[in-house]
Amino acid sequence: LEPLPQAEGVTTVPARARPLLRSWARSKRAGADLDGRTVLKEAVVDEVSLRDARARFAERWRGTESVLEDFASLCSRRDFVAVLADAEGVVTQTLGGGSFESEAERLRLIGGAAWHEALRGTNAIGTAIAENRAESVHGEAHFARVNQGLCCFAAPVHDHRGQIVGVLDATSHAERG
Image (cartoon, rainbow, N blue to C red; front, side, top):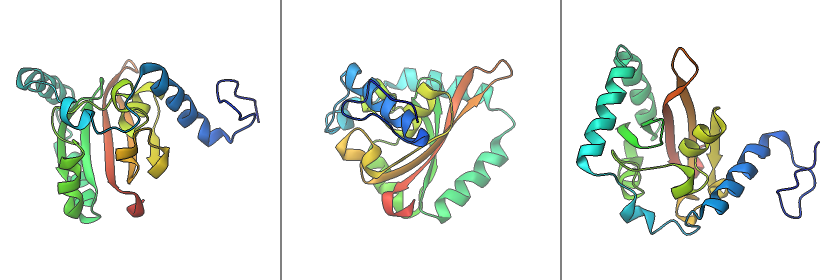
């Protein structure tokens, strides 16, 4: 294993943990709120911005509706919320949720909520964007304490040029993952 100089006090870490360590370092440098409660009130874009994000999203994801509906149905049956976010980490749509739906709303997994790392710290949506790869963030791996009861799985979606156009995420209570 290679040393990671940016991880204070840690000389070797398993390869699977490296993206999360990089994410924590980015989150800390960006000044993300470690408690996470402040952003529960402030991290939602205005209606015009949300409408624009949804329009861009719909244009890029046209033709995937049946796949997304199947994914949302599967998530809901397992008490996960399916989250669709744009390339900046702004949630454009949430689907399903089952018994987790009200908790998802409380934690601001709602349309218009921003989930990029600079704001929320390490989380599956923001970290998948920053690392440009599928990520899972479980429990205390989340930067913000308020999100440490979650398990989240996210993957960036790319266009034909390899650019991230969105993120597909599934989130529930940590014990579900």
